[in-house]
Length: 484
Ligand code: FAD
Image (cartoon, rainbow, N blue to C red; front, side):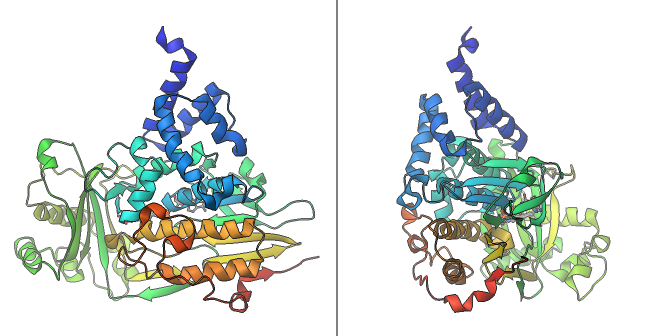
C-alpha cells in the first residue's frame, strides 16, 4: 500500500506537477500539492520556505538548490527589498511570467492576470545563449527534459510558458487565468490602485497594488513609434513531430538568408514557384518553420488574391486563400528539408485548425517609453512595460524572448529602486536610460559572462550609463493629478 504513505503521496504529486503539460494541469497539480502539504500559497512571504521544508526528498531538493542559488543573489537582499510592494502583472506570456519571478524574488506580492486559460502556441522561439543559461538556472531541464539538449537553442512558446509558470507558482506568485485586465480604478481616500477585471466579481479586482507591469503582448497605455521597413510577409507553420528515427535525421535550418545561399532560393523558386527571403526550421515539439515570403510569388501562387499597396488590405482574411497558403507553406517546408520529412501533417493550432499563419512585419512598433508613474490622491503607481508590448520583435531573428527577458530584468531593477524608496523621477530617468540600449542589443554586443547576469543592468549591458537621461527629461512621465 505504498500509495497511501503521505510522503509517497507528496512525492507523486510533486512529480505530477513537475511533469504537467498543460496550463490547467499545472494549476490543478499545484493546488493538490499545496493542499496535501497544507501550505498556503497566499502566504507568499513564507510559502517557498515552507514548501521546501515539507518536500525534502532528492528530486525536490535538486530543484531547491537551483532556485535557492538564484534567490540568494545579493540583488534581492533575501527578499526584503520589495517586501512592501504589491505588483500586478498583466499577461502570463513568457515575459510576464519571467518578470513575475524576479518580482517575487525581490520579496514583492505578485499577482498575474491572464485572459486565456491555455498555453497553445506551438511556434518555436530562438533563444540567445544568455536566455538558455538563465532558464537552466531556473531548472528548465527538470521541468522539460528536452530543454536545449546538445546544441539546440530553441523552445516552443507553450513549453517556455509551462516552465516559467511552474517556477512562478513555487515562488509564491498568484496566477489567475481567464481573468482579463480592463483598466485601472483610481484610489479613493481609503483604497489604493486597483484594476477593473472580467469577470467583474473576480477577487483579483480587489487587489491593491503600487506597481503595474504590462506584458500583454499588444499596445497598452503608452505612445508608440512606428518603424516602417520594406514589405515583409512572414509565414509560420507547424507539422506533427512523431519523433521517429527518420525525422531525427533531418537537419534543422537555423537561418538561411537569401544573401547567403542564392542557389537554394533559386532552385526553390524554379522547382516550386515559391520565392522566399529567408527560412528557419526548428525541430521541437513540432516541426516548426518560419519564412519571409515575397509578395509576387504569393500572388502568383494564388495565396494572396489581389494586390494592394497597403499591407493590412493585402493580408486581410478575405484577400487570402487559406488552402493555397497551406500548399505554399507545405511546399517550402518540404523542399527546404530536402523532401526528407516523412508524412508532413500540419499540427493543429488552438482552434483545432492546421497551424499555419501569415503575418505582416512591415511595420514594427516600439513604445516611446518603458515606464510611467501616476499619482492620484497621494498614491503612486509605478507602471512598466515588458516584452512584445515594449518592443515588437522580428520573429525570424528571435528577438522576442532575448530582448523580452532583458526588459523583464530591467523592469525588476526599476521595481527594486522603487522598493528602496528612490524618488519617482529618479526611478523613471534610470529606467529610460537603460531602455535606450534595448533595441540595439544583439547576441554579440551584450556581456558574455552569462552566469553573472542578474537584474543589475551593469551585469548584462557592456556600456551602460544609468544617468544618460536626466530627471528633467522624464517629467512628462510623472503624471500627478490630484482630484481633491
Ligand atoms: P505574449 O507571449 O504575447 O503574451 C501576452 C499575454 O498577455 C498573452 O498570454 C495574452 O493572452 C495576455 N493578455 C493580453 N491582454 C490581456 C489582458 N487585457 N488581460 C489579461 N491577459 C492579457 N515569436 C517568435 O520568435 N517566433 C514565432 O514564431 C512567434 N509566433 C508567435 C505567434 C503568435 C500567435 C504570437 C501572439 C506571438 C508569436 N511570437 C513569436 C512572439 C513571441 O510569442 C513573443 O515575443 C514572446 O512570447 C514574448 O512575448 P510576451 O510575453 O511579451 O507576450
